[in-house]
Length: 392
Image (cartoon, rainbow, N blue to C red; front, side, top):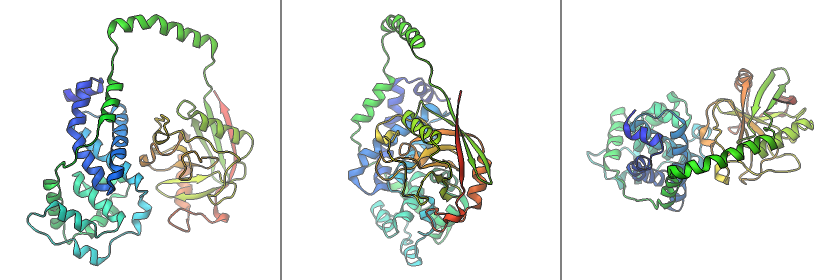
């Protein structure tokens, strides 16, 4: 492991700041390049680094290059989410032939402003993909991973915009060569956060705190019982049972609401009304069409709403559906079939599937949605026979 990375993993302030200083210009420009709205860039820039540090301290990042790739990948995912883009929208967003021809005025050296101007002839979805590819220096495989997009489909999509691989590589070369870091972020908040999580008390104070901490721990053990671990057995008619472990530590209000609804029998007989193969299956709506819920809503327990929630939307995660309002979650939930980490920080993940992902795969693969939103005909919606809550 490179020394700077190792020091940063140990939360040495100088090393963490050095990584930040090395990457902030590129990340800030990339945010601005993708969002196309200067008023959003500063806010999103801070959110990107929140995700970068979260992943950095959780994952096995060992080299500067891996850290740089993490920065670009996080930028793409956060901006993709802010623009409400996803793989489903891209399927029908391929540019017209006229647009394809227009962008291919290949010169030896193309000014960056001209590159950006030509990219603006594409629709938003296509523009985002091409910009991500040109500026990130990612291979198509890396970009497909960042976008949770099928690699072969993405390769065809990008190549469609260029007459040849040679033209595509030439355009990418020009973009990377000429796109410098023209903007400097207002980064006081980012540096304050680095200061906060790398701050260390003098050793003398640490020793003074030990007796206090011991008293607190002993009192806590004597006065409070550990919170129970909840398990949910989701029995689906004609398919079987999906077993989920709920996480009260990361999303206590969400788990409490889900448990209360399940134990009251609310979910019995409801359905999964929205299913997208390669993404997720969503259910728990008494109306069966995505418009309903229970008689109350709960606070959205995710970072964009001021709540620390470290659960990521990887395969097997269960999370709460909501409207555009952060505190609108009620009874609808979804189970992630394929990694969808672009949802992190925006939706309240509250548990993980322990067994039954084969059932999720079967349901998703057999689903026949009537539109790109994953709408399932009422007669074809898988039925939730019951959700049984157990504790340990």
